[in-house]
Image 1 (cartoon, rainbow, N blue to C red):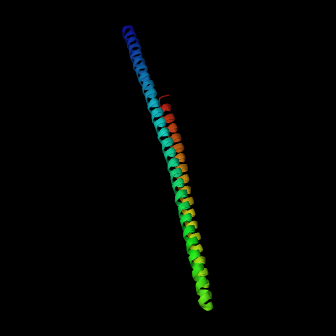
Image 2 (cartoon, one colour):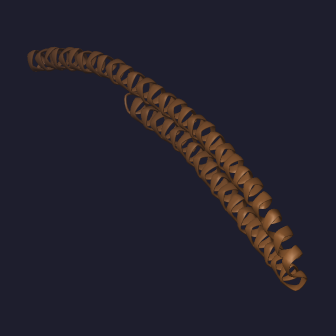
Image 3 (cartoon, rainbow, N blue to C red):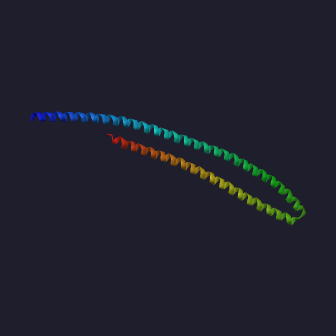
Length: 173
């Protein structure tokens, strides 16, 4: 009986040492995997951050180019319309003067027509300018909203990744 007890004790000790070696090997493997996964996540997050920074920079540059181009075209349009209006105004004044000399009633009629035309043109020009301004504000708001959503999504994604990594790391503790 003593022999069996010694063998059993010896067998238990051998099994205990084998299990300890296996657990040490698994622990080392898990530590190496944990470090490798952490490195992969860090590189992925860094690449994602760099990509988002580049996207925001490109969006800002695009908006700046659009704004500059729009300012140039709007100024050119306003100058062209103003020049055309000045020319048209001069011609109409000369016509009105000739008609006034020929016929006073017809001159009054033409003056009233010109006033209606100028008022309608001013209303249309104001409406056009308001519409363009509204569209620019809407585009700017949409761009700002898009940038905010991207930043918010990036923050949420970073938090989610950090929480996932923490849960993953806790599984090895």
